[in-house]
Image 1 (cartoon, rainbow, N blue to C red):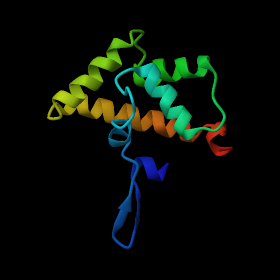
Image 2: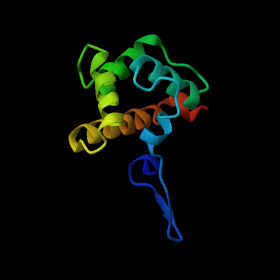
Image 3: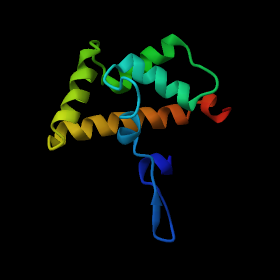
Amino acid sequence: DTMILTGYTLSGFQMIINATEWVKKFSQPGDPNQLINELTKRLLRIDISATSKQQLKRDILLGGQSDDKYWTDAWNLFLSTPGNTSNTNTVKNRLRDLTKYIMNLPEYQLS
């Protein structure tokens, strides 16, 4: 939790997981299905069910919305207008929360 939320500092050097910069390197971070598939593939040795992935998508990335376009639009706006503080915070917080959630799964602990 510390690595994803506030970072770990030792001798003036801070280590923190920057989820937004990390997922920029993924093949299609604007596609919520592809994003979750790639994120779980990278973090878990044991895959989670399609139902669990759908729940993660709906509850975290889509914020309860039902249309995948919600995340795609937010991601594209994040890339094109980084000065849009509200959207930037939404994207960063959702990616942070998604990564944190996956890292707290039993499947992650068994990896």
